[in-house]
Image 1: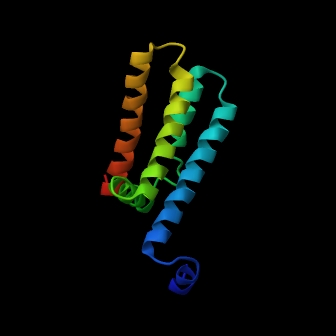
Image 2: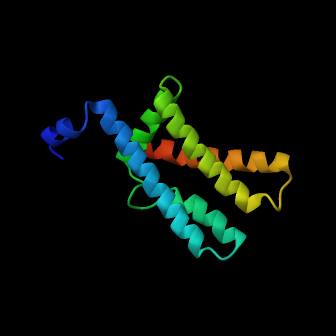
Length: 130
């Protein structure tokens, strides 16, 4: 996109970043949903959730760096905090729906958190260029 088009549609770099992250979250959500529809077992559903968070067309360094910026801003900017909360609630709900019938509530919370942290860690490493 040219700088002129960006200036026409967005008031600044902050709005571009927010729009880009919203768009990427939608891509991830759509990919997870499509994979979940094809899944036939609990294991396939779990793989759909995890793999859907790393679609090949979106799992790249610039997207990961934008995600990292959102994480950094989430503690001080309510707009980014809400976006991050929406993402984590959806991820937690998807993961819990797969594992709730086989884990106790305490173990379920630990498993959901652990998988979420590993997903975040892979995005962090991608942002760092690893």
